[in-house]
Amino acid sequence: MEKKNLDWANLSFGYIKTDKRFVANYKDGAWDEGVITEDDKVVLSECAGVLQYAQTCFEGMKAYETKDGKVVIFRPDLNAQRMEDSAKRLEMPVFPQDKFIKAVADVVKANESWVPPYGSGATLYIRPYMFGSNPVIGVKPADEYQFRILVTPVGPYFKGGAKPITIKVSDFDRAAPHGTGHIKAGLNYAMSLHPIVTAHEEGYAENMYLDAATRTKVEETGGANFIFITKDATLVTPKSDSILPSITRRSLTYVAEHYLGMKVEHREVLFDEVKDFAECGLCGTAAVISPVGKIVDHGKEICFPSGMEKMGPTIQKLYDTLTGIQQGTIEAPEGWIYEIK
Image 1 (tube, rainbow, N blue to C red):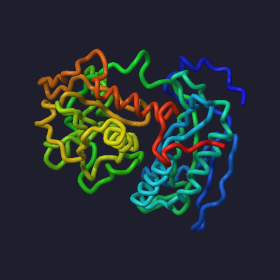
Image 2 (image 1 turned 30 degrees about the horizontal axis):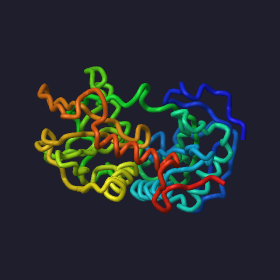
Image 3 (image 1 turned 90 degrees about the horizontal axis):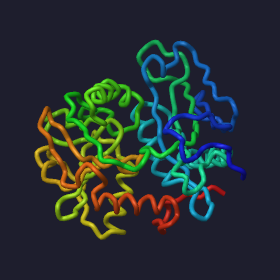
Image 4 (image 1 turned 180 degrees about the vertical axis):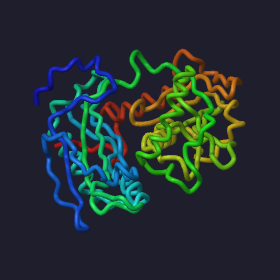
């Protein structure tokens, strides 16, 4: 498959229209078979459920070209499960997990010439999403839905390497107890836009959200889970019912324990103990790990010993191992890599 004529090494992390996408519709209590189409336009009623009451959820994942030229997707079964969880919480029909994985694979296959070459630093970002499509004026779930998958080639999240970032403790709450923080709903990201714009205006890269009930425990940022490394090289990840279960975070904890022989703790993390950690990072699909060098809490600085110049040594090992698994240079655990045939 001949690649598109793009400057792969200099792609930004942004949207580029590709050739094909997948579309399926839910009507009269059932999903249709869905189609691969060239039509990138969505036509909706002005009163569509998604426009009135934000009834929508999505996923984010990537396809890669490995060192031996295969095109693979990383752990799509977990994305399928998480989207099912999101749909159920938002009273949306579940798109079956097996059909989800097949549709993702079909879209990647149909856009294979857009998959960046191995070693370019770029990947093919995959965005499955679902929304209420029929007119809804009373506050209730829609009756009809559309499920779509688009793909777009993206460059590395960080140009010139992953330099540690500075974040702030936010005065806003990301999610309420018993709310929707644990699912990937568009509404969670809408509420994070004002806090992130404010943080950027103040010179910070991201927000640290604390738990809404007590404001004493670490939750996550607007779009990534936290990981911490203790001074004795234990990996600690915050536990809460209002944190989105990051697939990258779950993969990193497995890598830490089974590849690097580290002790792993998934538990509540008090903000008061953050100052005692040796390293800190944000993990997610886009960057894998974004190292954090400094957290500012209303003027008080928490500076990690790993510094502001480069990733800490333990986080670097985690990053190198997980990206090696994704790119095919390190043997993956069974079931983690889905090859596009």
